[in-house]
Length: 345
Image 1 (cartoon, rainbow, N blue to C red):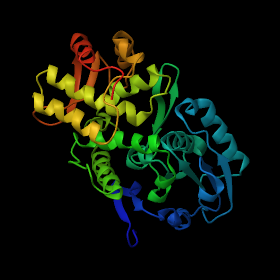
Image 2 (cartoon, rainbow, N blue to C red; image 1 turned 90 degrees about the vertical axis):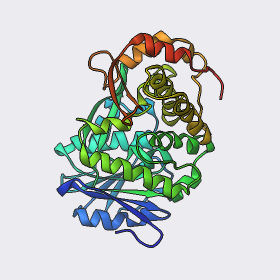
Image 3 (cartoon, one colour; image 1 turned 60 degrees about the vertical axis):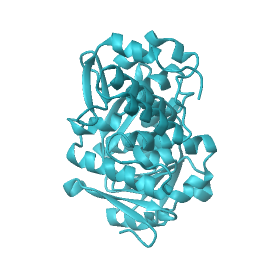
């Protein structure tokens, strides 16, 4: 239950339902969550310094996380499972992640595999992870061929979005988190510009919770959450992850507007709105120099997107709102890329 000054969003998944608590100091709820699971011990995988690593309230082992996309590998997941075993973790115990989205992704996948599934609680410490990565049960790691190609659905028992963690973020990482908030503007969250950060997080989480409750395993509506992600993931790969996820999704959102315009799905004002919303959060709106000049390479990377079964697929705005559009002609994608600015704000 949320306390005073906290916000709570419930992810309605029947017996697997859980709460997302949002607000300053909510990490203090962790011992109660772990007690509710019935765990007698825990492993805490933390990307934060000791003073910011939460106490789960039971005997625990702390494992230093390897945060960052380059560490989202099957080798790291295997090492995590080995550390769980070394700590004597049983299937009735708990794993706690404390870090950014790459930590919640890898730890969630390890938890889903160890003993065929052990309870996991997420304490996302970046804005990006709080608004998106920690909620919804998607866990995955990368392959050299593409991002998030190996994963599983494994819902957490709770998510504690402690906004005190956000005060410790470097400016670039804080702004990076707004990439997922900006794309929410076009998939049903409304205009969140200028709202308090707790409200922005809660609105983004509530939207995702509703979509996940309706489509946990990406059979339909959950595709909406990938708005801006098709080009975004390609840009991450093309830059060797120097471009961060939220930054890449922001540029992907601007591109999605341009592509929807070229396909006649939306008018010029709505196309322009895509750039205006992204820019309002201080996010990049242009393709990065270098990677952005090789449209052929970006198209090739987009072909490897998980949504692409036959041809290129994008979540695009339109007269009925955002929806998944399959078999988009490559010529139109190339034209939209050519219309994007390169290497500027």
